[in-house]
Image (cartoon, rainbow over all chains, first blue to last red; front, side):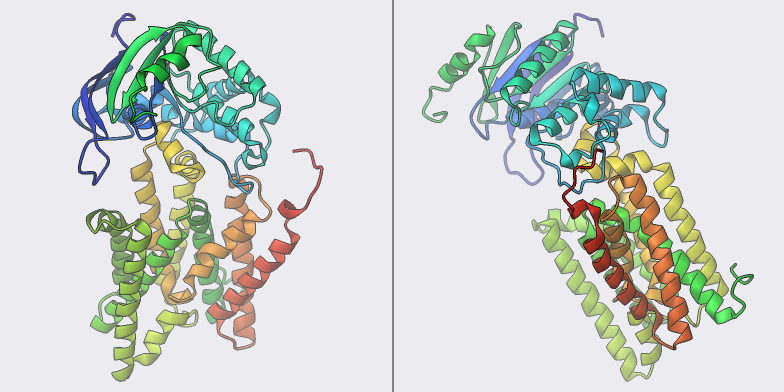
Amino acid sequence: MTPSDPIIRLENVYTAYEGADRPTLTDISFSVGRGEFVVVGGPNGAGKTTLLETINGMLPITHGTATVCGHDVRGDGVQVRCRVGYLLQNFAFDPLTPFTVEEVVLMGRFGMIGLIRKPRKEDHEAVEKALHLLGIGDLAKRPIGKLSGGQQQKVLLAQNLARDPQVLLLDEPFSNLDMFARESINKLLSRLVASGIAVVIVSHAFDDLPDCRVRVVVMHDGRISLDRECLPADVGQVIRHAGSAPCYA
Amino acid sequence: MLEFIIQNNIVCHAVEAMLFASVACAILGVIITQVQISSIGFTMAHAAFAGAAVGMFLSINVTICAILAGVCVAFLIGPLSDKARVSPDTALGLLFGISMAVAIFFIAYMQTLGQGFSAMGLLFGDVISLYREEIYLLALICVVAVVLVVVLYKEITGIIFNKRIAESVGIRVKPVYYAMLFVIALTVALCLPIIGGLLIYVWLVTPAAIALQFCYRLSAMFMVAPIVAAAISVSGALAGLEYSLPVAPLTAVLFSVVFIAAVFLSPKRRVSFRKY
């Protein structure tokens, strides 16, 4: 895999949930290069989250080929997930959850460390670095269940950054964040994109996007209906325009 | 093993059996309660009970039948819910119902054949008539439970935190999950003759629930739950044998009393300004 090769490449991909009578994603061909920032938009049920979970191999591909970070998603999903950060949508932890923030962030490296092996010094250093990047180093010893929704969201983002991902898939990352937290996350995302990490984000908050070149992918009914570049300020308008059909309203 | 402390052979065997069973159940109980698979544990316990009843009726090794039934249920839940298009919860309800029906049928039938006394042992447990080999087996399963947690601690904590997040960070969730279920089935089956099919669930759930009242970290729960379980079980065995009371039900009551006390004493429910 050369640096110019796409880090995500999907060709004619179909994804279906177990027991479903029709595919959730239909004929998706899509590639993302290093350092690209992609915003995925579309109505509820369009297949945005399914697209993210197909990229990191959590959902079975029924047809087509998908390669992420040089690994075949169908045959080597675990290797893909060790290299891809995926922030899941809407998580809230019970106050009794028996994990501290640093334990949760360390979990982000468990796949890389491998079965049976213990975390090493560099794993703990990576945790410290990720906590520092998100500005939550002072929360390291706190139980995650005692934090606010926004702080929990930052911890989960730190968990993904702790494994130095080549690709970052973010599903509604701004959902629990206040204005200041959004700004700091956006600055961080800009830095990550500039360092060559590909970021694919599903979001309905188009007002605060990182200051970088943005590619907009609009999905509808499991298909990609629009794929173009635009300025961060225009993302909302482009998505609204693409979705001006009655089904999107 | 504990003859140098307890001279009476019967009491010694009973204490050893309760000690090993409680430690194994408490360790696995932390997993069961935290992964929130209590209903799976519950169904597996009753399937093992049904397997043991069938084994007793057919004069086949009771423990092996209990293990087979417990493991079968653990591996049937997923396929059953997929094929029958029902939720895992409904699948568990179905399997629980079938297990109880089979167990009660064979126990009732054995009573009509005059084998009721041995069948009752399956319901309420029996710590008196234990063979040395059975205690060695319990010690072995205790070691297996400890080794499982020590070796796969990282993966187990990931699954306990959240199965989907664990999968997304590259943990091989399925094999670890099934290894956990297998060891739970094994433990339940081996503990069944001493604790009984109706009470084993108390050993699986209550020590972890008590530990959760005081522990903020999972590692602490894995230490506190077996210590609490061992202390209560050994006390229950000694008190039961001393005052000629049924050991397993008495210990189950002790577990419940300690749990209620723990809820009232838990620092997690107090409002404080403690800095973590």
